[in-house]
Length: 316
Image (cartoon, rainbow, N blue to C red; front, side, top):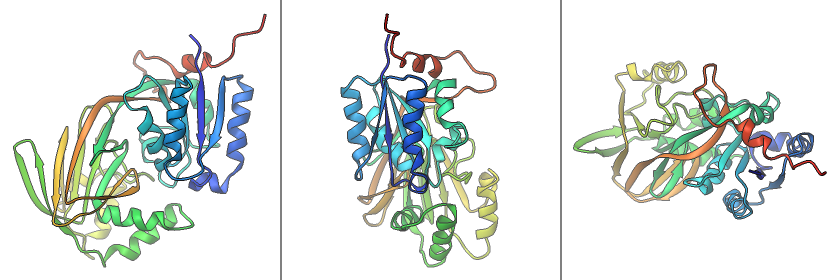
């Protein structure tokens, strides 16, 4: 069986914009390993989804996103429910899904990991019809995403600065969360639903969450005050959010979230307008992705085996 791949490069993603050599690195990687693959750059928002769909039409079995969580989201959205696998070279500001899956960044073996990994099947979240693979959120979460996306210079420092400047001027909303027969009414400074355990930058909004358990993890941070902001920040970065009296956690296959008025949500950091009621559900085992082999791997199709099929047959 012969395999074809497409590498989709976002030149505007944080790391890529600062390191344009990554485009050539991808081309050199293909040439070095004699892969049946091509590299195409994105030209505008949502272009990565178009390119990924075109790759499927062209018979590609592996589609690699070279960019941040937004690029990953656009490419993966086209691959949900298909036999094609997602490859990810995480080059963004947070790289939440990449960090959760242990994917190395560019310059740290990201391209080599495509040859040495295996294929894992993970879940997809869907919020108001929009797929997400790392996390979605509303409230302060969406406000920060909107402000951050408007910045010309990104990165962890810019994200932290934007968060701090917005922190004490933001008023939490009131939310009603339905989960099966359970109804939760709560103020919410942050309301997040996560597939993985973190936003990115090792900020763990859902400690213990797994991308392949058929469930989503909801986290509500009810209020932020000058007295609890630093303890909560410390808990976020040390995987101890569950111990906070300011936090509510739920785990389920889906949630219905209601707020007072329409507004914005974000899916993997991409901001979208949405109504007052948001339906969130999981699509279990719906996306195949190339990941590094763990220390004690379970039997699985290796991406090395898949990529070995990318090499053209020798000409007699």
